[in-house]
Length: 172
Image (cartoon, rainbow, N blue to C red):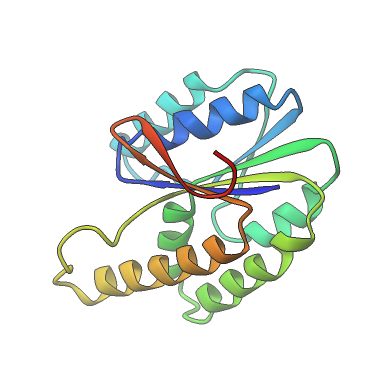
């Protein structure tokens, strides 16, 4: 089963994803995409680390998410990816401009064939004002395209607002 959990910043999406993973009763592998380039991001990462159960396997993968998923894939486990927003930022800021397109397509290609249950967490970026900068607009556009494509192949899509999940697709 593949689930996509979207929401704004501090909407409760990560907490919900972690609870779903815990409630599954399966082994959990957590793929973190963040990179700690400054003190504020280090604090965010430490906060998330403190929230996770210590027995979960944690893998840090900022760029090659599809390869990581393929390596980890096996039945009877949950792979939680948090978050696609930071992953997209990492790809867009990479020196190879084609990396983003290639990695997104690879992710879309492999997700339907994985045996693991997969939970993907991402920020919904299309609800605010149109950004003024070119890279910011590209980020919103590419994130939106990816979310639409993931939503089509996901078994369940959830949108979080103020800590409340709204099911957009899949079982209630």
